[in-house]
Length: 271
Image (cartoon, rainbow, N blue to C red; front, side, top):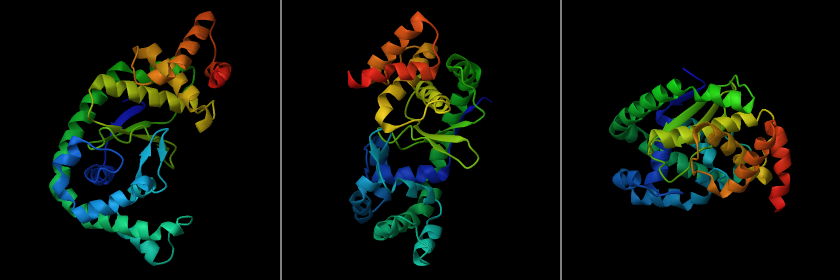
């Protein structure tokens, strides 16, 4: 098995189940199918905190998105607040946290018993199929060779069954140094490999080029340039075509390192 690995877990899927049904940040068929799994009153509570709970790569940065990590253990989060240990820096959100953790607690068992078994079957089938194809293609090794940067970390593509049209490509690093990234399973393999590869290349570039929101398009454009060199046009990042075309033109003249390409494209940000 290569460094790009497909995984899934119940707690992440439970959190996004709630977000999908409540239409917090996005709307899809999954949410409609399970709309009766949450009361109207509790949906209204989640919608009340929609801005704080919404995250989308490069666009939204919800201050409370992180609480999804407590979806499988809301009792611990509630205990921390009630014992006054709390969450430092989030004292002004105490009421919101208690409201949301209370909803986690209320619906967790029902989700685990009634909804998760079918979702797990779907996730397992998708993970197995995509992993087989990824391993056969060896895209991680090809990416490292093309970019000229090796990685010791595992890139975990964390699969979610309920985020079509919603949050994806949110990279976060674990204490062990490996990387997790969220992806919807509502796509075919070719679409999955394109976004997995793009995000994996981002993790390679981060070893040489510091990321900042100010250079977001230049950075993403560089990752997509390398992605397209490996698998062809993906049409996922057409709004960064000027960077992709610039990098391709420069590489046709001579071979440059990623950091050299990135630096040369700086003038395009003001063009």
